[in-house]
Image 1 (tube, helix red, strand yellow):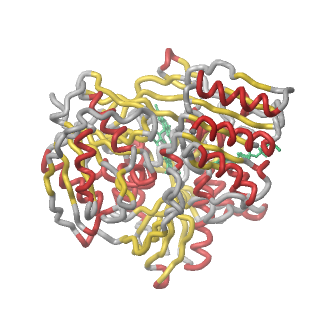
Image 2 (image 1 turned 90 degrees about the vertical axis):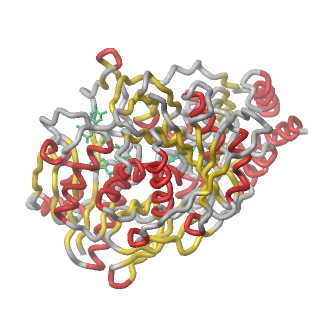
Length: 327
Length: 259
Ligand SMILES: Cc1cc2nc3c(=O)[nH]c(=O)nc-3n(C[C@H](O)[C@H](O)[C@H](O)COP(=O)(O)OP(=O)(O)OC[C@H]3O[C@@H](n4cnc5c(N)ncnc54)[C@H](O)[C@@H]3O)c2cc1C
Ligand SMILES: Cc1cc2nc3c(=O)[nH]c(=O)nc-3n(C[C@H](O)[C@H](O)[C@H](O)COP(=O)(O)OP(=O)(O)OC[C@H]3O[C@@H](n4cnc5c(N)ncnc54)[C@H](O)[C@@H]3O)c2cc1C
C-alpha cells in the first residue's frame, strides 16, 4: 500500500511554527524522500502566506482553511476541519507537533477517525506498511518502540528532535482552499479571549538554547542575569519548579514533569539540583551544562559539562563569552 | 452536580527501570506504587467543586488490584465512592485507547456533569486518556487549566488554559465537560485521619476490563529500551571561575558544536 500523509502545520499569532519544517522532514523521510503523497494543512485567516514555505519543505499540496473559527486554536473547530480533510481525501498518516496545541487535539482526532495515537514520539518510520515510532516513557528513564495496528495513524513529533529540510527553495505552493462545514451544535466550548505572552523569545519547546534557573537564583530580580545570557544567544529562559513555586518565575517557564518537556541543543542549568522531575523535562537536550556550588549535585551526573561554582559569578562570564562568540 | 475523577496508580517517581525478556517486558518486581501526582489536583478540584455545588463525586481507576489504593486515597481525601476497572485476567494489550474506552463505558453509565483528569501520568505519560474519554463522551476537554470559575449555577465554566510562552487561552464552555488541572489550580490536601477511617466504609464497585474493552488496542509495544548511557561529562572544579567558564564555552563550540 502507499501511505498518504497529512501534516498539520501549526500557526500561532500569524507565525508558522518551526515544528512545521521538522514534521514535514520526518514524514518525508518516512516516505523515502518522495513528496507526491506528502500534504500539509494550514488553518486560520491569512494562513495562505505560509503555503510557499511549506512547499519548500516538500509539501506537494497545501490545504488552506481560512475561516475565522480557526484563527485562534479552540479545539473542536480544528478537529472538525482536519477530520473532513482526512475523510474526503483518504489520509492514512496524520502528523503534528507534540506542542501544547498538538497534544491537546490529536488524541481526540485519533478517536474521531478510529485511528491509532502515537504521542510525543522522537522519531517515526515505516516497517513494511506499519508505522513504528520511538516514544520515551517513565519520565524518560526508558523508551518503547510502538507500532500502529490501525489503518490510520496519528503521530505527534516532539519538537526539536530533528532539523527542517528545504527540499526545493523555489518550489511553488500548490494550494487547495478547503471549506469546512462546521457542525456548530458540537462546539460547546469557545475561546473568548487570548492573553498573549511577551513573545520576544522563542517558545521553550522550540528553543535551541535554554538557560534555566533553580531555587538558588533566590529572587525574581536575579533572573535578569539569565535573560541577559539567553538573549546573547537568542535563547529562552527556563526554571525549576522550586523557582516557580517560590515566585521567582512564572509557571510558563517551568521545565519538567509538570511543566514543559524541552529538547534544545544546549541546556544550561544554573543552581538546579537535578531532581528526577526536572530531568524528565530536559534529559534529551543534546548538550547539558550544569553550574552548581555543590559538587555532589545529581545534575552533574547528567551534564556534559559541569562547572562547580557560584552561578552569580559564572553566569555573567558566560554571557560575556557568548556575546564574543556571536559577534 | 455529578463529578467524576480519573486517577491512575503508577510506579513511584524514583523507580529504577529494568528491562527483561530480551527487551519485551519491563521488570516490575521491585516496583513501589503511588497515586499519579497530577491526579491529586483532579481529586482536590473535585472536592472543592462538590463543596460549592453539592451532588456526588466518583473516582475511577483502571488497573490491577493495587489500583484500589489510589481509589482509597481519593475516598480518604473526600470523594464519595469508587469504580475499579479490574484489568486482571484481561489478556488484550492496554493502550491509551483501550483505557479510555473502558472509562467511557463508566462515563456513559454515570453521566457526569464534569470529569476531572490528570494532565499526564509519570509512567506512560502520553496525556491521551483525558481528551480521549471526553471525545468518546462527546464533551469538550480543557487541558492544563490554571484558573477555573463556575458560572450559571454550575452549568458552564470560564477556564484559563496555559499554552506556552505566557499565552493563555480563556475558554467558556458548557457542561458536560472534562478538565485537566495544572499544578497552580489548587494545593491537594492530605487525607485526614477521620477521612482515612471514613474511606474504609465507602463503596468501591468492581467492573471487569474484559467486559468494557470491546475493541482491540490500536497501538502495540514491540520492545523497550533504556536510553544510551551518556559518557561521563567533564566537570571543572577548584579553578578560577573565569578560567572554567571560558574553557567550557570553548568546548561548546569546538567539541559539542552547539553554539
Ligand atoms: C509531583 C511533582 C512534580 C514535580 N514537577 C517538577 C517539574 O515539573 N519541574 C521541576 O523542576 N521540579 C518538579 N518537581 C520538584 C522537584 O522534585 C524538585 O523539588 C525541584 O526540581 C528542585 O528545584 P531546584 O533544583 O531548583 O532546587 P533544589 O533542589 O533546592 O536545588 C538548588 C541547587 O542550587 C545549588 N546552589 C545553591 N546556591 C548556589 C549558587 N549560588 N550557585 C550555584 N548553585 C547553587 C544547590 O547546591 C542545589 O543543588 C516536582 C515534584 C513533585 C513531587
Ligand atoms: C504491555 C502493557 C501493559 C500494561 N498494563 C497495564 C495495566 O495492567 N494497567 C494499567 O492501568 N495500565 C497498563 N498499561 C499502561 C496503559 O497502556 C496506560 O495506562 C494507558 O496507555 C494510559 O496512558 P497514559 O499512562 O499515557 O496516561 P495519560 O494519558 O498520560 O493519562 C492522563 C490522565 O488520564 C487518566 N488515566 C490514565 N490512565 C488511567 C487509568 N488506568 N485509570 C484511570 N485514569 C487513568 C488520569 O487522570 C491521568 O492523569 C500497560 C501498558 C503496556 C504497554
